[in-house]
Length: 381
Image (cartoon, rainbow, N blue to C red; front, side, top):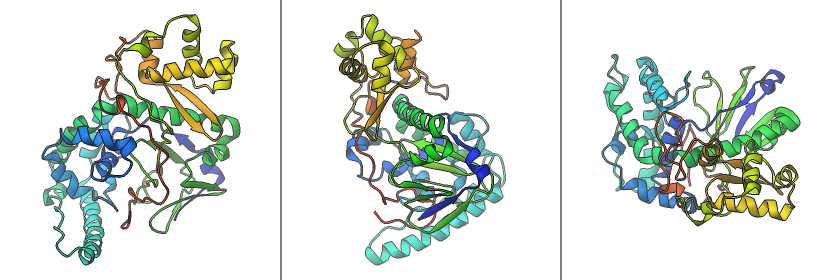
């Protein structure tokens, strides 16, 4: 069990991340690429991504075990958004911090290997991180930065518009809760593995852990590749961040290049519906804003969703519709029909029509107690 303790000042300091974090998604996706869970959401992505992976996975495997602790310096707190800025922050990690976290990784890894060896004596030992990572000098983390960049291009970059759309839909839902009822309401709407019992936020976690915010507030970071349990930094002195899974919808949402569904997007009514969804809208609000019946609003939203222009996130008995990057670009006149001009958020052009964008299979919410991303201690599946 993880328990995050809030003060009154911390409640005032709860904030939502502006969007998905490229480095968090990169590191957490490396867990997903090596397991078989969540096939509806991740199955096609795994199949496609594995064909593009090369030797970069050797170094990443040495630093990111299948379960348990991985170094905090892999997901640095950065001043500027974007993947390039994250790599710069990682490269600037002080060598003494790298050495300390690698030493902790070695301890955690040794314990996990002893347990694994008892279950499977023929198990191969894991690859050890290069000792040079902890040495002084500007080039000490160069190989790691290169490996992350190569892996990111294969596993994250092609799917970034979809990842961003899911995180932004989650952010819209939490933002509404914050406006309606403040931080209490926001914390109460988090996924079911997180339970708000003021003044403590409890979470399913593989070990007992107490995190006291002590007036520092908390950054809530939704993540597409986080699954089952949330993630926090191992080092309690770092700025508090809670990474939690986005809620995947309960039905596949296939996004294709311009086709029959997109061709139906003509006429004043549907244009008005798309504009009404710009800042998030429930179906009831959509009907009221556009002057159509509830059934008609639902049908228009279905067509927009099939065309890949909106995402629908269910929460309880209500649904919230938000724009995808393609929908936003089309609404603002900044994209061609196939969405090739959408931006990834770190200066890289987004690609549409492959991977998760063509077979999202948004899946069901992850089951509790998975523990895939725990930062301290071994986790069993």
